[in-house]
Picture 1: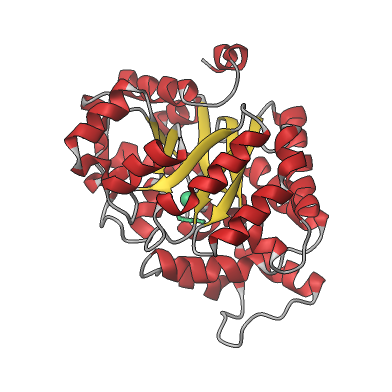
Picture 2 (picture 1 turned 90 degrees about the vertical axis):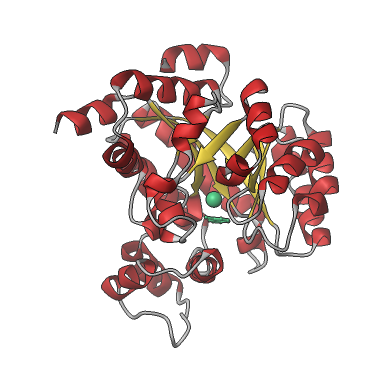
Length: 334
Ligand code: ES4
Ligand code: ZN
């Protein structure tokens, strides 16, 4: 349709995508076989059954349990490359121009796979995405907040050369938000930033956790943007601050529905954000698990909010402005 064509053409940036969350059942089972990885007895037996399971998550923790099992089939550098490359191929036809992508080193180092192998596989796919599709990329390592802080400090320390050299461009914080508030990770963020002042900082906050998680991620971790952040709407002062300081929220509509944060995307406070000049971008989070890549997330919002061309162009512009690429690249994207 005309709408699909318009939203496809609109220059899009992805700021909230977990590379491990792009693992489709159609790749999971072959990788498990190829690597001789045994899945739990209770795990679905084929791609159809697994899709069905993915369509019925009770909440964030229920999803995370499957997500971490999925991670176990990734062993070799080429597995990480293949995973990310499949993702870039898919979204290259959806008008994606710039991707700032997350990965969870600890999901792999805890299984004896080195940070270098994981990062190198993902980095190769990022380089190829730039070369073949003119998709620019940034790589963001995330800390698993349900793990002990000492382990998070260790993974940051072991990432020192990758942060110094700019292979890793950002630091994030993911996994179960509660009961693991941002204040636990102050030292991790300080350490990472000490390796390279150009390192960008973000954190998941305000999906499960309240608006205080957002405020504390900004004040205590030094985050300059917030992943999800939809519960910011509960605090009018915070809303004003996000607008004044142009702090972008990376919103994930399909994710929020599938994890039952909201019953329907129409419940998301996006009109409030627009009316109050709170910048947000539209993202896919874990598209293989939540049933849609970036274009589907745009289309879903269109179906509920409508919005004029002018509003969509404002959203596209804000998502370019909130990106971590340099001024020259932003100019090209506009
Ligand atoms: C995640 Cl949706 C979500 N929330 C928190 N952590 C995550 N890791 C991967 N997806
Ligand atoms: Zn996420």
